[in-house]
Length: 250
Image (cartoon, rainbow, N blue to C red; front, side, top):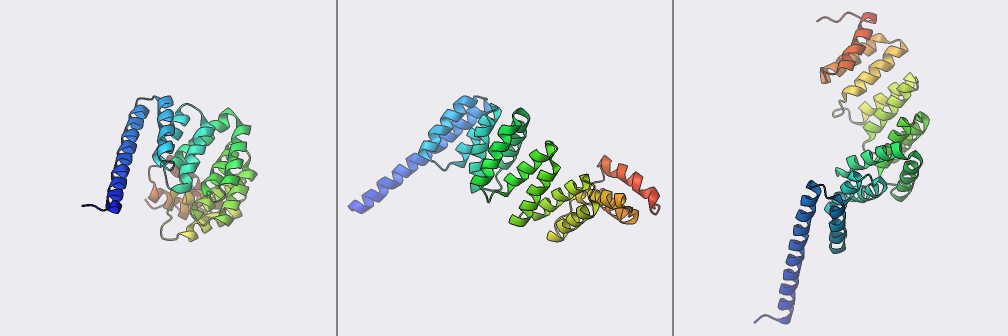
């Protein structure tokens, strides 16, 4: 005969199995509703799932995605941020970036307030500074965007190469070619054997060209084209650079 303890363990296991089965069934229902574009019902079902499993990232993602589809961007951003805090590489990062962009077009002040509050709430979320920098850039506030990337470079080690690349692009747009080149060099140094971003070489080529150093510009534009031979902008820049440097031997 089973002891009281064994009976209790078996009962607990059965209860857990039933709860897991109920959660899986609910997730399937939510998925079907989302595919059918019944977003209000998705939100209601996701709310119910979160009562059963408060940490369900799937519930937050379906609910956040539904909020986004319904243009309820602040609520979507909140759900996506919850996910990103627990899984920094989650696809919710892309959804949140889209929401900030859409919200910025609808109500710039509201977008600024929401992202400022999010940065205070989640100080370790490096992607938020990137989102704000992008918003500032699209609003024509290049110096503010520059400040965000400078802050990210000081505070975070990953993805450092991208922050240097983005800040370098801003310096390039501000015609500070020396600082742009310095940042592109730092991006390469941070991951010398891994970071072969064609736009890094393209942008550094532009900076060297504007500085009057066509030989260095030619080396970089050749590298950019070797990494992405189909990019039309690379060939346009090459056509400008090559006459001022040595002839390319085809």
